[in-house]
Image (tube, rainbow, N blue to C red):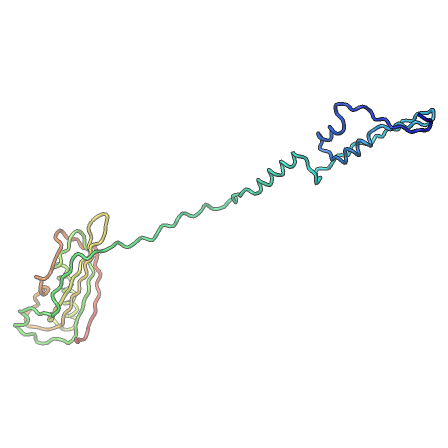
Length: 247
């Protein structure tokens, strides 16, 4: 070697060289190269005197917020992103409201019986024979709605309706009824506990006054039809339509 020439020697690599440590510590490749170059001892020979200059610069560690993360960081980020995409249940949220109960349907009804005194108004024969002193030209009409259980006694219900008509006629100055007419319809209603019937009764007549007492019974009872059994009246609703002018 000629005097004055400069030589650069590199120490032998051991089991833990800088590239290996770089892979373990997660260093950048460019940082490893710079560190390796900076860490190598440099020997400069000038003439008879050898001067060795050793660089004591420490390896540079890549910060955690590096844009080139290691494989472990990638796995962690992937796990974090997948966990962020998972739907989260809101804390303190109320449970879903139960399905509203549907509105209770009205029980179906079936027409099981229908009867009437006829289309022509009638008067009891006793009143006709005695001859009423007078009669009005107005018609008293009364409607009843009965809810019955187990049976329908049509004769009994007609008597109840006729009494209401006679009471109204008494307020008009009469004591008997002429030109009477009635109708009755029976509908069976569904019930899990017992058999129930809705009975609609219409009774109408004209106020009159007679020397004889009122017969106190509906006209044409032989036309009444019934459902046999022991009848129980659960409810009753009444309505008047009076007075009505005769057509």
